[in-house]
Length: 479
Image (cartoon, rainbow, N blue to C red; front, side):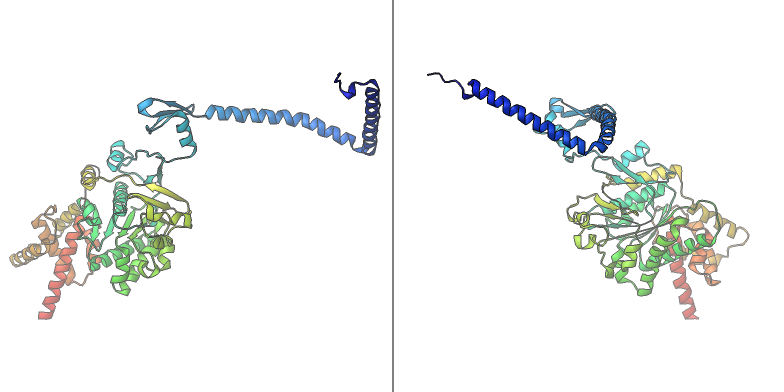
C-alpha cells in the first residue's frame, strides 16, 4: 500500500497555498495599518536605530577591554610536586603555595578564589630590627600584620587600650610597642602595680630601665601621674613651635588601679587618660591602659571607654569585648583568638584582625645594647654634673659626709646593683636633696631642678626622697 503523506495530494497543496497567501496579505495589512498609525514616530525610531549603531560597537569594545584585562591579570598555577604550587601573575612576583595532601593547580586556584587562609611567615622583632624596619628615629609604628602578610604601619595610637586575658599576648604586644616608642625617642613611664610578678611588664622591660621610668607602688604611680600632668600642662602653656618629645604613660592592671586605690587617686588617673585623649595628643602626649575587665565599675566608667582612640583586643570574654569593639560579628570572635592575635579598631572605627610579631625572650637586652650605641642614657650624667656644680664651691663637713653616707646606704638598698651612679656622687646628690627638702621644696620641684625625667636615675632619686622624707618627719617628731 502507498503510504504517501496527505499533504502530497495536489488539491491539498493548492488549498495550503491559498491559505498562506491570504494569511500573508492579512499580516502585511496589519503591519501597514500599524505603520500608518505610528507614522509620526518613525523618525524617532530611526534615531534610536542610528544611536544603537554607535552604542553597540562601543559596548563591544568595552567588553573586549575587560576581557583582555582579566586575561592579563589572571594568575597561573603550576604544580611543582613535593614543593607545592607556584603562583605566577604578570604584574607580581611569583609566589609559592605550601604543599598540601592533594594539591593540584586546580585545587590551588580554588583555594585562592575561596580566600582560604594560608599561613604567611610573620617577621619577629629581631627580624624587624635586623632589616631596619624598626630603627632609631622612626616616627611611625608597626601595629601588626594581616593574615595574608601585609603590614599595618601607621601613626602612633593616641590614647589606646590593650585588652586580654592572661597568656593572650597582651604583655608582649605592649613590649613590642614600647620598644618602638623608645626607638622613636619617647619618654616612657610604666605604672605597674604587679611589678613583682616574674612575668610582669616591669620584669620584661627591666633591661631598659635606664630609658624607662617605672612606678610600682600606689604612691609611685600617683606621683608619676601627677608629674605627667604637670609636664603636659607646662607644654600646653608654653608657646613652642618645636616638635615636643613624645611622652607615653602606660598603666598595667588598670582594673586593679580603678578598684583598689583611694577615690581621689583614682580620679587623678582617670584625668590623665581623659586629658590625654582630649588635649595632650597635640603636645606629644600618649596614654595606654591594659586590663581584662571593661565593665564600667572596673574600668573607670564609660568616660574611659569613650576616651579610647584605638583598642587592641586579644583573647577575652565576649562580655568584656563588646564594650570595646563593635559590631557583634567582630567582638564574638575574641574568645577564639590565638595567642598573639588581636582585633584592632582605630580612631575611624576601621577594624582588622592583626598578628603581632613574635617578641623573643631577652629582646629588651638586645634593644638596650642598641640604644647604648645610638641613644646612651643621659639622666645619670646630668645628676653627676649637677652634684659637681652644687658642691664645688661649698666644703663638705665631716658630720654631713658620715650622715649622708648612712643615708646613701639605706637608699641604695632599693636600687639595682648595676646602677651607674657611684656612691660618692650619690652622696652629693642626697646632700642636695636633703637641703631642698628642709627648705620646703616638694619632691616634684626637686626632680625638676635636678633635671630628672625618667630611667634609673628617677628610681634612685625616688628612693632617696622616700628615705629623707621619713627621716625629716622623724626629726620633727623628736623635736
